[in-house]
Amino acid sequence: MSDRLKALSEAGVSIWLDDLSRERIETGDLTDLVKDRSVVGVTTNPSIFAAALAEGERYADQVAELARAGTDVDEAVFTLTTTDVRNACDLLMDVWQESDGVDGRVSIEVPPDLASDTDATVEAAQRLWDTVDRPNLLIKIPATTEGAPAITEVLGRGISVNVTLIFGLDRYRAVMDAYLQGLEQAKGAGHDLSSIHSVASFFVSRVDSEVDARLDASDAGGAAHLKGKAAVANARLAYEAYEGVFAGERFAALAQDGARPQRPLWASTGVKNPDYPDTLYVTELVVDGTVNTMPQKTLEAVADHGEVRGDAVRENYASAHEVMDALAGAGIVYDDVIAVLEKEGVQKFVASWRELQETVQGQLREAQA
Image (cartoon, rainbow, N blue to C red):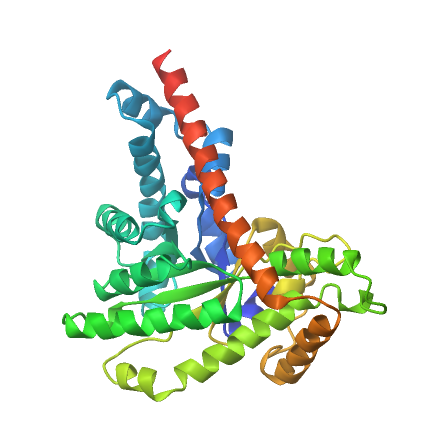
């Protein structure tokens, strides 16, 4: 057991792995991470599945079976990914039970090319939920304008949701509102609110990448010291917003019926700038009631040298506001940064989906040859 990861867990941070493959499941690697690395959940995305399929041989038999049945590429993607996620859910079921449903979660994403279609997103979420058929599943829905009503509708059906692709504070507030609306609808439909869980995936590293590039191109003198500051400040202010909403009367009324808060999840926590500490987006965002989903490289960096010094968020609200004010003073327009990141985020998700489709299509052709 890693003492550093254990300390992070004991500080109230749920450690989730941002990766999944059939190799990890069948070799016992994921089981070992749960046992030795305090991992209590898994997130996935199309890029993760594409890499798993391209690099692993453990899919060959199922791909061959799908090819013999004449399965089209979209249905093959659906079958392959839901199989892995169902098996991962089963592997994490003990964690789910021991944590009263809080952890032991596995996320699977609706097709990203549905991000602008509310009704199609809802139906895709329902099909994933029904097919995996595990209570510890989370359905990932992007926080686009069209995604908000889909999030509400899916939650209202009693389905647990991982809201993804959140970069900005206004969007995050809209996501929390969609969550509360969903709980209210679920309550009206007679669902057990205590069984509905949600996380809000707030993306971190990409904020620094975008802001740093703008600072490099800026003529504002003396602004270089702000590089590498925006992402952590932005996330800290997201937690401040979270505390305000979930300490409010609207949620309190739902909590009386068993509702759970929608936990902030720090996503995109792998550091992209090699000049920054490789544990930056973990150790600087330690605060109870959160999730940090990490790629393996970041997980191992934290296990090796991550310094957990208690709550790194609540006492830094004032300094976070100061950073954002200083960035504005340096000519960084926050709303424009967020708009660019949201647009690029959707485009990257769609590109990853296409990559997954192409990977599976290639394997289906090989199996038919």
